[in-house]
Image (tube, rainbow, N blue to C red; front, side):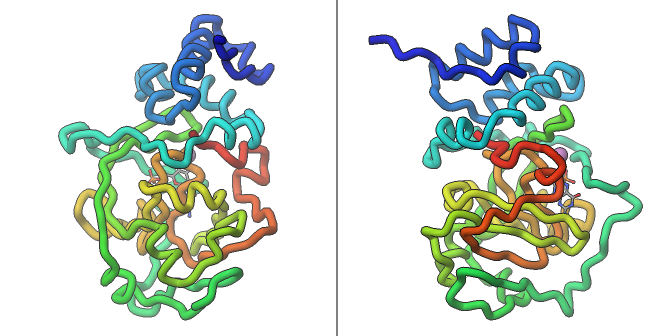
Length: 254
Ligand SMILES: Nc1nc2c(c(=O)[nH]1)N[C@H]1C(S)=C(S)[C@@H](COP(=O)(O)O)O[C@H]1N2
Ligand SMILES: [Mo]
């Protein structure tokens, strides 16, 4: 028996038929659409921003349930050779680059709260001593651009285990030094490519890309990747997010 492809939300039907067809075929074949695949599908780069924006925006209107069903927590996002890294890598925030927040490394401590056994705050030296890995992956912004970058840090799963987070809880939330905030589902928090990131392009994460640390998730749209993380909390109460509370789809992943 042939399985029918998942039904796409009505908003997708306003897209050009060719894009719908491609998207449906992709979903049908893979039963899960990675952001990387989505980007490729539309030839996602600045030259094709319009088409990509349309698809991404439509995707972001999908309801969380449909997206969570399509999301296979074990599935990896594509990785790329270092030669594909975007130079310069784009900056984005809800403010301009001249307003980027400067976090003082000496006094910084990462705060932990909620369903976490060991809530001791972490200094940067302590965080940097954790085992680290690198990834070259594609960052996809809902605004219609994407770029490949290299990020280095501790696998987030390892960190959550180390502090005794309740891994059966529903959400992990992030409060940022610049008033930004967001939250993710636990399956994504535990995904092997979800990384608490300290470095960009082999150097200490610059202020504009989120010093002292960001959460890097190649399986989520850019706005789900918090920069300048000040506090991490684990909870069963839906925490929302800066853009999510203004109507962006909360799941926004693959
Ligand atoms: N703290 C914080 N994190 C944030 C944002 C922000 O404004 N503040 N913007 C988000 C958006 S919309 C994007 S696309 C990425 C941009 O990351 P980059 O500057 O490293 O490209 O950061 C995300 N995380
Ligand atoms: Mo974004």
